[in-house]
Image (cartoon, rainbow, N blue to C red):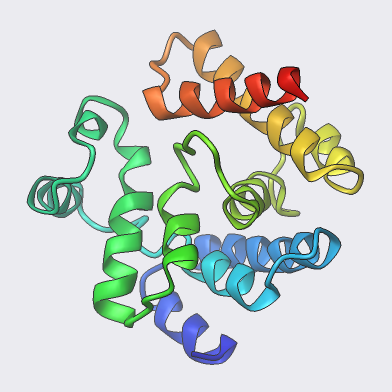
Length: 189
């Protein structure tokens, strides 16, 4: 599937504002993939489809989580997390994308997971630092992303967890597992 086909499919699923965000994520993902020697076609496709299910009704997403035996812990956390794993499922079902690497990058772009691979980190980070994002700490992560994918990734994860904790919001267990896997790997090396 080429870029134009993918964007046409996605545009039908998103608001104009979210489509602009998606274009920013796509450009950022391609830039990061080029910088860190990752498959740019896979990064582009995952970035285009990363928010495919963002505006699906919550009840539909809940049903898919239950019917597809996804991690049911998701249902105890903010529904903002749901669109990533549900999106990966729907992208395969509705758009016919079968590439497991692309689907996993979509699936883990909100919660993360322990041992994320380079493509998954790129999509997570591109979503965090795309040019339309404006919040405290994003510029520091953008600067780090030009120096070290892993350092930028760690900083984005740390910022996200700190943000949630500062608002007394729960942190999904896989997000803590992701953080621990990064820090423990760093300490070992």
